[in-house]
Every structure is written in C-alpha cells, then in structure tokens.
Length: 155
Image 1 (cartoon, rainbow, N blue to C red):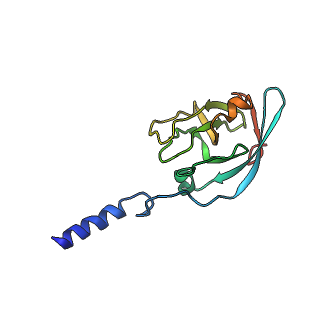
Image 2 (cartoon, one colour):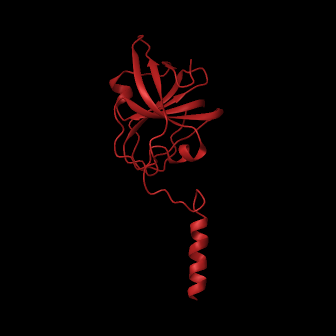
Image 3 (cartoon, helix red, strand yellow):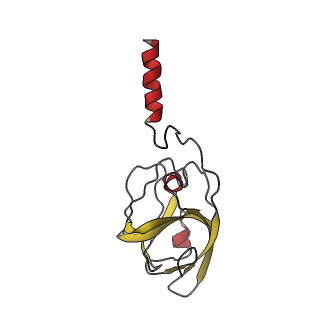
C-alpha cells in the first residue's frame, strides 16, 4: 500500500507542466530590451521590457511578481502572428495587456486585468507580440489602439 501511494505521488509530480517542476515563485529576470510606444500625438513613451521568448518563459511570464515598475514590462513574442489569448493565473499584480500586430501597431488593449483570474483575455485578432505593463499605464500615458511600437523587434 505504501509503495502504491509513493508511485501515485511520483506519477502526479511527473504530470505537472514543466516535467514535474511546479512553478512556485517568479522566474529570474529575463534579458531586457528598450521599447518605445509612439502615441497618436507623436509623444514617445520609453520602456525597458523583459523578453519572454521561450515557451517556458512565456508560460511563467510575470507570475508571482508583486510589482511591475511603471517604466518596465514584459514582451511576449510569438513565432507567427496569431490570435493569442492571455490569462492572469498566479499573476499577483494587475496589468495592462497591449496586443501588437506584425506591423508594430497596437490592435487591442486590455486595461487593469484581474490578478489571478483564469479568464481568457482576447488579443482582438492575430498578433505578433503581447506587452504587459503596470495596470493603469495605458490610460495614464494615453496609449491607444493604432499607436506604434518601436524597438525590441519592431521597426
């Protein structure tokens, strides 16, 4: 009986995403790049963004981080433009999600997302990347759909 329970526990661990490595804390900071959003009024807003490029980095994202500084964020770059829903699982800080088309134009913004929600947040169409910023940033800086993202692979 004891051996059966140990075997079942081991199988349960191996079934976890990441080959048995349950994510219980934030991932280490990722490499960063500069990114600028050029607003409809020509005003430039500069950010330093962590680059979530691998599937593992993208799966973890900003989970378990309590704060996202106002001039920082995380950029998720997808291999090809596609409809890319996001969620807030294990994400403790509210975020603004900026969905960016292949041409660098913002096609959708989800403002002030709900921490730890499992609800899908629609990208609003095919996107090449998703930028996560501190909640309230897009409203405060008047960043809108149609504004242009420059840098970090968008030129």
